[in-house]
Every structure is written in C-alpha cells, then in structure tokens.
Image (cartoon, helix red, strand yellow):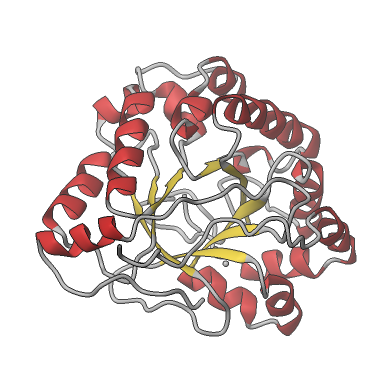
Length: 307
C-alpha cells in the first residue's frame, strides 16, 4: 500500500546492536485516540505529504494532526508540520533483520508491517498473519517503537484460491482483529471499496468492531487511494468514504500511489484528487467529529527519558 501526514524527539544516534538497546530504554506506552476525542491521525508518504501541503488550505487542515510520515532511503522528516518519522516493511523477516542488526535509522519512531498477497511478503507470513503480526508487534515494542499493522484484504487469497467476496472473507477470517491484538495503530485497507460509500462504510464498521473487541486502546485508521486500479476516483468518492467511516475510525491512510512494483496496475499519481477532497466544505463535519479535546493526547511521538 502506498501512503500520507513534526518534529519529534529523535532517539539516540548510532548503529549496530547498541542502537536499539537505546530505543528499548526509551520505550513508549502509546495511548488510544478514540473517535471524537481529538484531531485525526494520518499515514502519508513523503511524496504525498509534500503534494498535499503545497496547498495552503490543506496544510492548515493537517496542522495539529498526528501524522505518520513514511520515509524511504535518505528522506528526511518534514519540518513544515509535526510528523512521526515512520518506516514501512513488507515482511516480518526484513523487519526482524533490521532491528536485530540495529540498522534502523535512529530518527524512526514507528514501523509499519504491511503484509499483503504479493511477492514482497513471504508465503508463510501471508498464510499466518496472526502469528507474524503478533511477533512483529512484540519486536517493535521491545525496541521502543510504535507498531502499525496494515494487513491487506487480499491476504484471503494467500492459500492459492481467489475469494469471490474478499471483504466478507476478510471479516469472516478476522484477519484485521488478529493483526491488531498487540498493535498501537491498525489501518483497515478498505480503499478497493471506496467507489461505493455504503460498501466502504460497512466493511470498515465490521472490521473496526472486531478490532476494538480485542484491543480497545488501538488507534484505528481506514485506507484511501487517489488512483487505485480501475475506474477513476473522484474527490466526491473520497469525501463520502471519509464521512461514512468517521464514526468508526480516528483517521486515514491517504494513498497517492504511482505505477510501480507495489502497484503495477495503478494509474498515474493524482495528488490533486486528495487536495480537492480535503478542501471540500463538507470536510468541516470531520473537524466537528474529531474536535480537539484536552482529555486525549493520542500516541506520543516523544520517547520517554531513559531511567
């Protein structure tokens, strides 16, 4: 899944095994941000975030939000808005190797495990997401990192079949709930349904209910995309999806993907679609639903002081 939305206190610098021992000494205890308790949370790639905040209205909307900015290579965290520097992994094996070797960039505060039915996720991980998401969460927490689970709907096809109704199969197999048991944040990858607001809302509601039943404190987000495979996405579709799911989630992963190995059938990037959606006057209703509250601080991006 491709992604989107400060300055955070960086963990100790250095490389090698000692680096993440220092992460461990600064481990956090993230708190939930329930619906109605504060501004939205967002997951965004560096490229997507830059495209969105080029619009002053959208930049103002995102100001104060909790933004997990996905970074790759040598990309540096945004400075125009506060972000939680985040790195995404498509396999548990790669995440484990990175943390055990102590080669995770020291400025990274959150990690995503994005298991999907694709070549980047090993088959054994696809077929047993419950086990590998639990192991990934334990590993991330042991290194003082926020853990974000993003199991894809197409994991229902990991056994070689092709589900006639992937959304229903995903719910029936409780894949989202299993992945979220020890997570701090979970993203419901519902973007394939966003052309049908009712279907999107129903799927998000069902999976969210399962997730909260096993982990009431988790921050639940829902996935969106400006240009998935298939017919064109309009700003109206994104607005309808966000408003429909707002009572069930506390934020969104706004994908602005381009055609590549992660999305070979994607159309050309369409950041203008996301900008138009977030600039829509109806989005004021989201601000009302997620009105700021002194009672909830959300996930902390600042490590605790070493004892």
